[in-house]
Image (cartoon, rainbow, N blue to C red):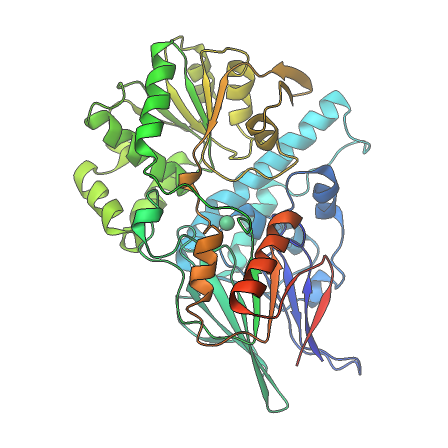
Length: 476
Ligand SMILES: [Zn+2]
């Protein structure tokens, strides 16, 4: 009996890993495929799972199919490879390009973490080791194989798959897997992360050209539920963004925006440019402070055919952010340190987006204690992350082993979200040609997943459940 086993993103928003196994109890060896191979982030209890082995040996997994480049979907790949996985990793070309910068950067951050733990003896392990290194992450890039959207790839007699658009970030996809055995055919749809639906009015910050692919049909749906209990604001974020920046600059402060280097940062850079060109905010220096910043812009521009007409028009009008005066792409640590020496107001966009690591920690350490500054969140903050604590009113926060007081203004603009909210998710599900036999909700905090389960059960009368960690679901 084939089954799906949820090895991550069950009861939590990180660590996405779903195993498809077509073997059976008689010992017949089928094919084993992992859909996504993400890193657990946030609470220690979750992060410790990054160090645990999978229930099946990594060398026995035949392939990884990757929905998109975000680390909570891709960031465990180097670990899987270290443990003996040798198969192909299938992804869309933009996802492969993005993983090419994100995975080595993740390895770099893992190494920095280990150095920190060893210096301050904050780990029970001596010496503390990185989960994987930058070199290991670079090596596994050779296993990636490009698959275009809508192209069917056959991995065995039993299993084929194709990518369909998810409209979440550049290159993001859902994976439709077709299993055939003994004359039975089952279609499984793994949503990965689902972007905003096809309506630019209610998703003013969107970049990609279309919502998730409509009119889907499947027997088993494995669906994300990040915003299963929330509705995004519908208004244009630009006036509020402009007002926040103006007020901060007027009081002599700087704006720190923790943001993942890809997609949302580019969206924000174009918005800042537009606000400056229309004199809605002062022309203060803007720093995209990430070693990946330049490459991320290049990848973003390389795939501009994926974008919405609005984004295309902005690129046409303003060209490449790399050519804009007053916008700085800080590649090196030295560039990054120079920002801190500046006494004048500036806007600093730096990763990681949930303040779990990276250069943004230095900027926050320096600027959180000063009430003139503003810390602005534009992405989801998972519980257990510094970003979550700051956003939710913590008065002090631990950085580099020391408590830093939070006196800066803290604000959040949810309109930038790359995830559909509850009404949008339901709107998408209503386009299905028929109800899946079973729907499992993953990638959500327990409250969000169960609220979405109830909304789907009531609104569509579907058989829908919340997935549990390591739960096995038989596929007929
Ligand atoms: Zn994502």
